[in-house]
Length: 385
Image (tube, rainbow, N blue to C red):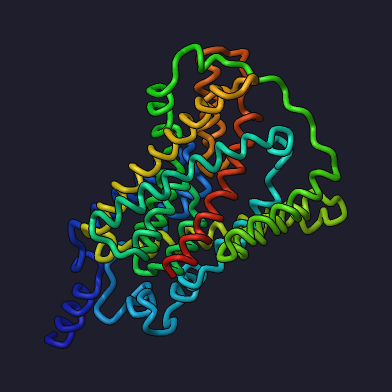
């Protein structure tokens, strides 16, 4: 009987209930909130459901001696020692983000950008959020490398945030990645108040003429020329830009449909699942509920608001010096949350005038924002790495 009691006591000590704390409960609530927003509100379900379930996995307390993801591996001081370590290797080594960019390139249509190249400037203006967050992070006491990893959240680009954090501050990947993806998912909540505050009713009702269509030669030449120019400006972003424009070239050239169809469907879906679950699984209560994480989330919200405001205000500035007026709402789409921020511009514009169709115009600064955030990441890596 004594032996049976010892085994029973050991069994109880090894259950998750014995080691369950308020921190685990808080993170499970966060995970369930992500899943609720994805299912009920349709906020980025392809991202929030894998991340949310990954957070659930991470916050089941493990028995002594067991680790879901070893802290030594996350810190870079040891090799992988568990199944989740091997899955997480794609995050810590930074090879999931370029694969995501390959799929994004195959999904992206740059025709609207080619039809109205000046809208590239709106994507560039929205990157102000990155440098505002970087300055804020340094003010709060983060190291320059940590500040660079945090600042990229302002680009509203999850894969780029993970890539740069893995290069500059691997110990911050979990809060940086979850902040970036959270704000990407909350675009319909965060952006409209900023857009309304900075525009008048008349500005929101501005109609833009239909854009001309781009020729096949222009669509094929664009990814090649853009890759060369952008990579020469920011060589640190060559892998992200290379995969983005390579995927787009496969889409536009017309002779690699099988590769393009695979990249934009099953391939990107598989990588998204692995990336989402791995990022979520790194967000245990012990590593995530820290003062640093709270600061990162605050800086992320600040940077996202600044990015939205910068895009809108720059569109208004362009209207001062241009005969062809731009609806400033599309400036908010300069953040690289594709295509949600473009949809928000359309939604806000349609509330003022149901006959105003801004979506295709908004896609131009939206895809420019993807390129801009990748360039910003390359510049920060070269300066701070």
